Length: 210
Image 1 (cartoon, rainbow, N blue to C red):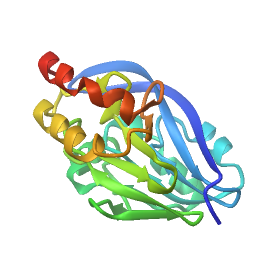
Image 2 (cartoon, rainbow, N blue to C red; image 1 turned 90 degrees about the vertical axis):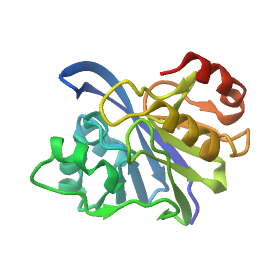
Image 3 (cartoon, rainbow, N blue to C red; image 1 turned 180 degrees about the vertical axis):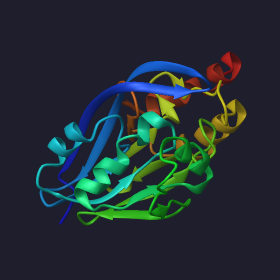
């Protein structure tokens, strides 16, 4: 089997951190084929995600980081599908704020792989937006799922707790911009982009700062 579909479900809700609330729309990415799928970032509401999954088996629910808008539907989705939840352990303190009575099932690590439908998603640890932030790279298709590390127009935000601008710049420069320029970047919010479209602007982002 090979991956035949990359789907997107949009969910909306509130992102909360440092005593502030923001209304946001999230991209939930579904990677798989007609039989099985990986869910990337189960944000806000499980219902629309389950509609996108359909009757497929959910191999894993992968969290690119621990902010509430990327994980708050993860446990409901896991209960409905019996799928394991995977998170990098450096973001456990963020997870525990949302789900204090239930931990993730699997620990993501740099270089680990998530297999679905005969294809491999490689885990890239890309701290900065949060300490345990990761991206997932689908090498066979030159597709990167960047969570909140890289967006169209620049890095993810670093002005709040547990984030750091020099760290996210290092992650983007050393882990993401070295990917092929044609790599399609599917982001945690907003529109997709490519590595080639973003790479020329690195120096501008550094000058702009956080």
